[in-house]
Length: 90
Image 1 (cartoon, rainbow, N blue to C red):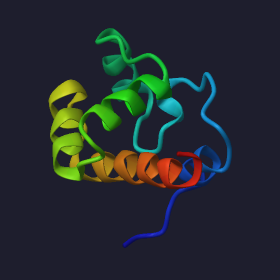
Image 2 (image 1 turned 120 degrees about the vertical axis):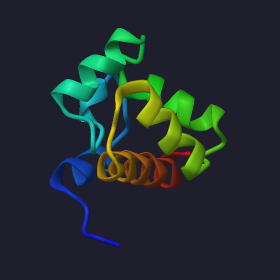
Image 3 (image 1 turned 45 degrees about the vertical axis):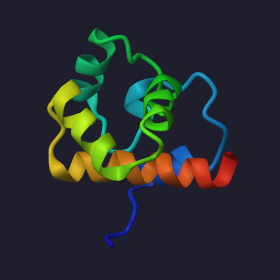
Image 4 (image 1 turned 180 degrees about the vertical axis):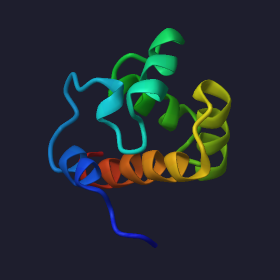
């Protein structure tokens, strides 16, 4: 697996709180805006979807692609970020 980004490391290092959706690894300005338009304005709202999908990688990646057009790398970065955050804080 590739090394994690600085954004990923910063996200998983502390509780999520009220971080915006684009604080998630793999989610930049454009994807963040698309998710916000669908009501996913905070990282914890995306975490909720991740948990509803039972942390299933394939389901989450498909949801992210369908919801905001995330590519394979963005899907993987976001999934890995949330998975590691859950392993640390849940």
